[in-house]
Image 1: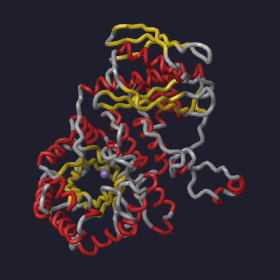
Image 2: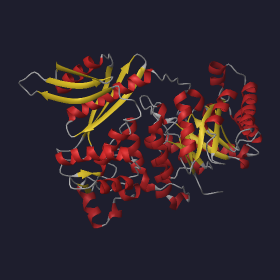
Image 3: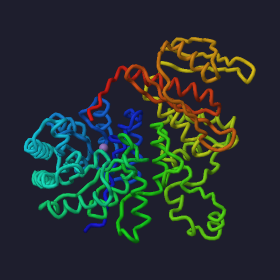
Image 4: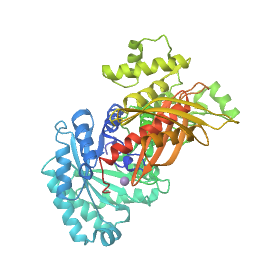
Length: 514
Ligand code: MN
């Protein structure tokens, strides 16, 4: 059997369905370019039929991102498949995939879809045939496969392969399977579906019991050759299989597994950082591979061993996943050229206008902060360049605060609201509260603050603070981010960024279909 495992990334589809992780088209494009550099085989770019925004993301990624196969999800319905086909039109020849699905478990068919097994089977075959009319590369998923009666599952798989599906993806939709059981399921499929050699077996595992990666691995050992996963394991509920964990398991234990992927592992950490930065979903510090503590050795006996010989306690080198110790890169005497060159090395290709904007911000930071690290540069790009897609109805022009243990916290804010300058003094329980109250008054907005988090981007008391907020108004939930060496200013920027998104979101109502 082939020893190559395809990596199918669904960060932009299932991952984006994480509560609060929605991304705009520009952000999705940036992630997609990163995924291409990472070397994934397939990018599931979205669910074209589900919203205008998703359609546009799939369309632009298909047109602009080179390398991986670009895929759109589609329910087993002709309209969905037609939308996927239209969105994928711009992909290079042989680089587009339609991924269609229908439930096959009795519990889903009976209660949710009100279909008989026969009807679901016929729909699956008809829609795979329909999709094959547009593209050669069709993937089919029997949703809730791990709770589907086996003989029926085999029957459906045989029929869709006969109809032209070249990948059959077995989802553990509700994260219910156990590793040995899920492995048996894959083995059973290989042994009982007559034409299974004409298709690649894929798996899509959810992490409700913390077993997504273990289940995927068990499936691979039993013959699956495509894994659906996401950066940082984000996704519905408890998330999907984590791409970085799957890849590093296969690499680190190739002695036992004998399997390989196309992933450039040095891009894993940068990809993780990018997704964290865009979605605001922080990675837990003890997360394998990409967590802050993943390579931090604390115990004295471990440190002693490491100093003598790294392999005593280190099974993966941090460098191999792209973690390098923060290095001093630039200071206030660095020129625009050096700045642009460093950004390029970090994977950001900016046009002239964006580069100028980012450079101005860099100079301001370099004046305040002695050392500017790669992470600072990334924060600047995130903050200045990646935010421009949402039109800025609200802009902060100045913010001054006074406070302390014995005075009432007060903020003086000046903002542009729809081009008009407004100024206000506001008081609050703290400096951030005062600033937020003032901003809410000036912008005449009534959102609820669901979450407020501040992170230091690098170490040191002069580090930039990165603030992430989550705001809710009516049914809309948005994320906002801002970075600055003063956390009160970073807080205000994050809040205003979220308000701009909220204002934009109200005019671009998107629906979630799955
Ligand atoms: Mn899923």
